Image 1 (cartoon, rainbow, N blue to C red):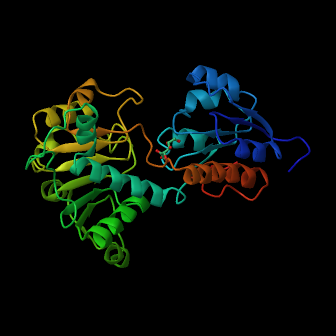
Image 2: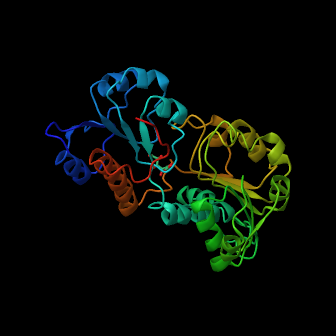
Image 3: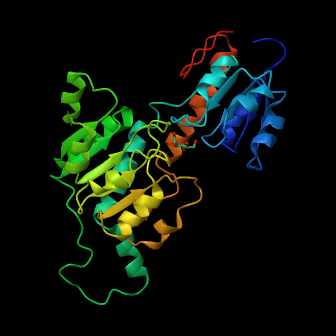
Length: 327
Ligand code: 8YV
């Protein structure tokens, strides 16, 4: 590294030990007050910075890049990077990085937890108990859908999708179907015990449909009214991927009409806002984007984002880049 330390912004409050780690190498400005900057405010904060550690909620686009001429690297503390305009970053010579692998198993655990809570109606049942409504046993009280031995349908088959497939097939004896832009290599398909099908078959056969695909213009509203109408009325839907992949208004209507049995949602269109229709129906389990939220995984994510900044400014190159700009 040169004598003049690179200037780094940490855009949201993160683990103090990771801030301290970065501060040993860089001139760090940390957002300890955890202010949610507008795009204009972020541009002001970044105007004199060489690098930034972001979370998924700061948009990095051409307008921001034009206002930050020194910026060379944006290290996202997230595996998803739909907050990046990657072509604009590449054109501006700015490297983007994400945090793959370190959150795969934790996020898959949560996907399964949400699937089970949804299928077995755990949130609904808990609210009922807390409200003092439990007076008696009855044969159909909160009777839900079977998980073991059922058909698990996975849309998107990257690392997290594969980790969910293994859980379903090996732990719960499920028949696993998947659909993805590209088919897995035969050995990986066999290891995940997953069968490739077209999207319509996936929708029609799903007892539980799990969404694990990245958000992009192509995946916007991949699940809308038409797709929901192709699913079994007994099916559940789980979204741990990104808001916007599901048309939340269409889903709220489908849940209200019992077009499908239930949904488990960790991500929402326009979050932290939640479509009011989703708040009004009982057959949905709602969590505030916490699929990767274990202490050790969030720390690993923060450290990988920091490692990317350290490797980049050390001249070793970013560890997990999402683009390769020419400088
Ligand atoms: C993050 C996520 O917590 O990694 C991702 O893509 O969605 C979550 O693990 C969130 O994006 C905040 O950075």
